[in-house]
Length: 154
Image (tube, rainbow, N blue to C red; front, side):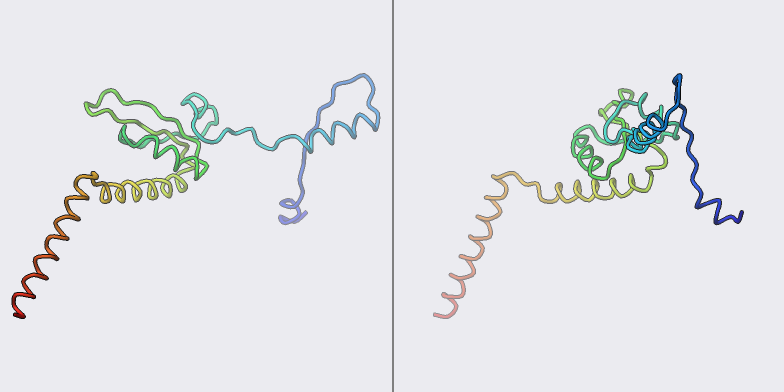
């Protein structure tokens, strides 16, 4: 056999317990094997114990406590398996986000989107009073320039 034939060839092992093996029981067993769910890996938020059961190396990244819900939304969007743990050793409360090392590429993409969203929110965040005050100052500046130009024309 060539290497290509070995790659194309697929093997499966099916074990059936029973007294007699008929073609009907073999057919039913093969159908149940083929229609069984492929993977039972859970995606999204889970506990650290569940995350560690998968056998992959775990990595963590610190996230601020006020932004944790926003991060969870972005992580679900990228189908990342992650676990959140509070870090009480730090004075300002922060969270550690654990994820599988094989999810590192999707995790970096999720963090890029999350950090871009956080930076955008910080720039746009003004209280209503501050926004009204800025608008009032702009209007007063425009009125002042119009009156000065009218007086200058006279």
